[in-house]
Length: 316
Image (tube, rainbow, N blue to C red; front, side):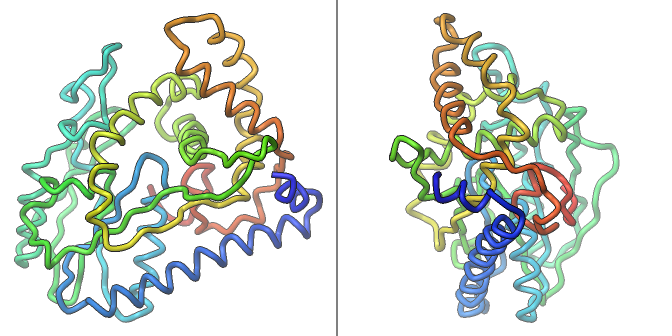
């Protein structure tokens, strides 16, 4: 953290820091592109999986561009559009819809569409609206040409029944996680999940009509689903990507730090919110040690962080 704060002390240093982090991502994409090209004769579906707010969607877009530069024609599909809807989703203990659960998705329809696409048939893909919690009435027509491959952005991309209609030989599985190696002021490594929590709190506030408190209180359900439906399948992946960006912490401080004193105070003596209190106190201490940085103009429009703070060139 102290070294990161040095980069945030002035404009020139901050620009250098951002560019160094983005350059690292660029190198990872280039290496991944080479690996995919070495196996392209058999690959028809590239599954990009990872826990909530790990950067799957933006990384999918950037991988698409990388593969296009190598002469391929990838087509992106998001499993998020296969949500059944909030009313049909399994319920958490507090009665809220569990959109992290595999049963919240139309797995049968997804497998049918993927099989038909790979066979060269035309399909109509659903469109899910997160603000209404329902599918749109209109759909997206699609047909996969022989020189095209599918790019799948999915929370549950490693779950075998999710893509059982596609043979293993035709799939290339990627896993993305915020694998940052940053030590906090206490010299302990900061938790990857706390980075993802901050990302989701920012994004939920403008993209899904949730306030930061709702996201924090719901986070233990997110973690439960990750442990049940993602972590057990990590041994099946073909490639792992670090989706962390060290410069994002000073940005999230600007967006979120003001909320955490109240979170810590409100949850401290509430026995039903001890999970939220422990998490809120840890994140409060983390952000308190970070130097705030408010100038977001120097962040590239295709940067992964844009998926959360807004301003991306990509449509979500």
